[in-house]
Image (cartoon, rainbow, N blue to C red; front, side, top):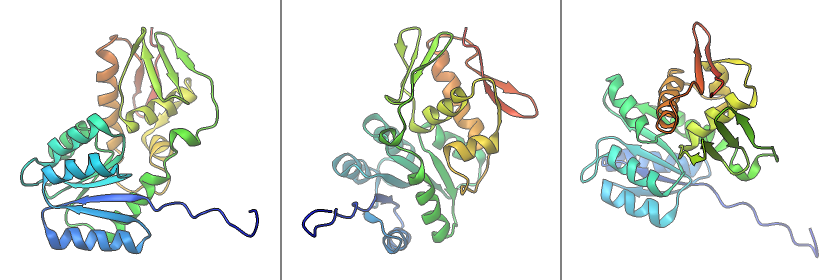
Length: 238
C-alpha cells in the first residue's frame, strides 16, 4: 500500500449459466451472484457458444438438453477455443449420458433435480483447482517416451504434443508427480477436484480413459497403469 491506496479487489469469477428453463437458469444465476460470482445467462446452444467465446467465462454451467445446439455440441465448440471449467447438467439418469458429456471435455456433472447450494459449492470447488500461473516452478518430468511440463502445461509424446483438457492434464500431473505411487480414486479426486468435492468417484475412470486414448493415438505404450483393487499408477511409458 502506497499513499493511502490499497490494491483493488480481484474481479469476481464469471459464470455462464446455460439452460432453456428460464426460471431455473435465473434461480441458478441468482444463487451464484449471492455467492459473489458475476453471471451471464443463455437459453439456447447458439447463444451459449457466442457468449462463451465473446466473454471468456471462468466456468460454464451447461444443460445437456438445449434448443439449437445441444449441450454436447456446445461443450465441444467451447473446448476448441477455451480451457474454462464446464459443469454439465443433465435430466437423464442413464450413465451413458454422463459419460458422453464428459467425453466432450466437461469437468464435472450434476443430475437434475439438484440443490442450488450444491451447484454453487461445485463451482467453488472447480475454481479452487490451481491455475497454471499459481504452480510453483517445477522441472519437466520425463517418463520414457512421455514428458510433462507442469509450468507450461504441455505433454509431449515422442516429439508430438498431445492436447489434453484441463482435467486430463491435472490427473496426469498428479500421477507423474509421484510416478512410483499407486493412487486410489479418492486420492486423485482430492488432488484434482479437491477434498471438498462430493460425487461419483468413477468420474476419475472416465477421464483416465480419455487420457489413455489421447496418449495412445501417438504411441500405444503403458503410460497409465491400472492397479487392480487400488486405482492407478504412472506406467513406464516405454
